[in-house]
Image (tube, rainbow, N blue to C red; front, side, top):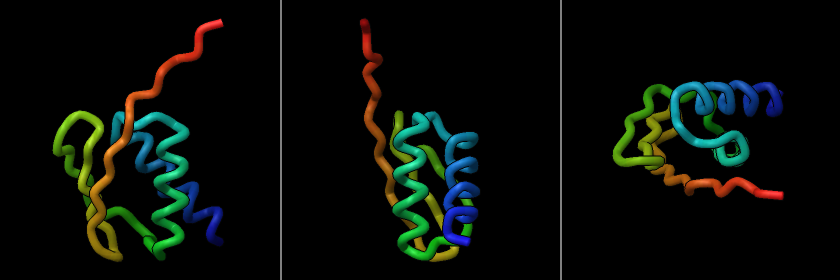
Length: 71
């Protein structure tokens, strides 16, 4: 159950934000740990900075810019 919920949160974050895959996965994991079942709204405050309103309160999320690895 928790994995399904986490995947659902992950997909929603990935589609609705500019946050990269790895950070979305971690954010979804932390939200699920905090018993969040759904994200009601996402408001972008600044580049890579969002307020998530959920069924379990509001969360401020600030992602970092990923650097690409060069061979």
